[in-house]
Image (cartoon, rainbow, N blue to C red; front, top):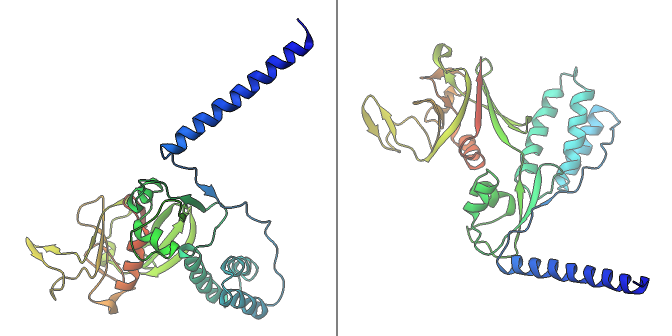
Length: 284
């Protein structure tokens, strides 16, 4: 058998394989196969910061004002490490948490924490939220959507960092974390005499304008006797959860019957971010 004959057969075989791959790909596209989500580009190498406390804080604020939140975040994180003994570091932490929230709900692609998801035929926001274990409200917020309508071919930015909650009863604070990293701290009220249960729980139900069941009575939202405020997120331990308040003056105290109580504006913000099955850890 001549070398030319063998070479020709190899070329024919390769061409046939290419045709087969293209046919299969075309069929999958025609059927509306879901495209893979595109992750954010790898993170650039972290650059050290130098300069005085005041100069760096001013630089970070400049980046915030120009919308360069990732640069502001980088500087503020470096400042926390450099000036850990400085009494002004609390101000840096507060500014960092504000920037963290801007990053969380912005359209910025963050390496390792976001993907870009293309909408395909048949998609709904609810389906995409379930796919990424997030909420419709969170997807809408980070993509600037004002309705639930999405269109084929639309690119959606999805935050993929896993959100969780840590409640510190000794400080009466609630911390939101993403993949374990602190995003924001909220003041809360916890149970009188430290009766709020300690442990790890999950959010199993969520309600807007919740009614309050108390001593066998159902007290509707809006009734002056209903203390739950504007939102409820119940734990997998009956009777306990995170909710708003009708008595904001007591936020920061151990003042509840066991639940975690927040300012209404704060609990509404949290409600939009946290999906069912979010992990909640409560510690003394």
